[in-house]
Length: 297
Ligand SMILES: Nc1ncnc2c1ncn2[C@@H]1O[C@H](COP(=O)(O)OP(=O)(O)OP(=O)(O)O)[C@@H](O)[C@H]1O
Ligand SMILES: [Mg+2]
Image (cartoon, rainbow, N blue to C red; front, side):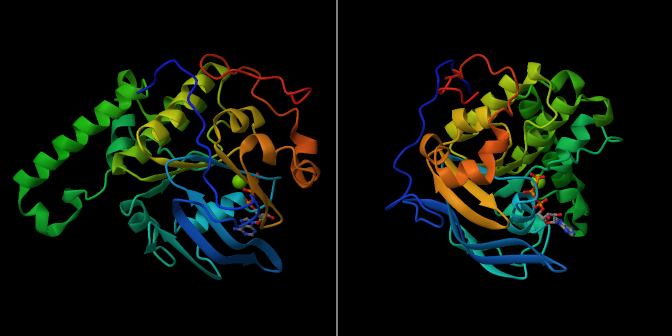
């Protein structure tokens, strides 16, 4: 769980010069030649990408760069035109999303997918893998099912407590604030004990009062040994929690590197940061120190 110290950034993640497609010392995800077009538009065209294990990687880039589409492809929510990618050596191309989640790779959505007319607890239970109640064979053994259901319930409660949503467990998800729904989605993703957690704009639309809590939860995932890949437009969040940054533009990876150096590259400033230097949540307090980098705010 959280301590109150500023967590150390992981360094030395790559081999050789930080550049698009550069190798990582210990990659958890390796992707090759992933392409996806919609009609005449090439949304994703990634030649090679490695995501470092047990680190926090930010995927940034302008609107329409292909970040969400890449997430959709990697997690089996959409089908790639070409490509191969492996999670810890296991091929994921063509694997449907529910199996990808079982294999340890989960994601949250840019627009939250919490089911409003289900309770917070039922949303959590839906996130659990190997739901015995769904299998006809196991349904014939109700004792087994009940035991598993209890275990799932206990695990859900533990996570809801961690995300301070336990008091809301019987409320409909629709009654939660936007930020609470983001927290619920993250908590639900953790029901499957993932190794790689992919978050699509976890901070978007979140009330400043909840931003610190969200940042801390993301940092905690790394402390617990998980790997995080997140898409974010908020450059403060990226600077302060990302160990590694991948920059996309027009479907391609155009730069990669540690947060503090990659964001100073002219190509990145031209492609993206020029228009986004001012994007910020306004309030980032607590264990993340804001360093005013010479007008970078
Ligand atoms: N289902 C679809 N059908 C047609 N075009 C699509 C579809 N999904 C995405 N696109 C197009 O693909 C491109 C990449 O979109 P994508 O949503 O991946 O961008 P993004 O980097 O996530 O942008 P944002 O930062 O705004 O979320 C855009 O031009 C978008 O209009
Ligand atoms: Mg997107």
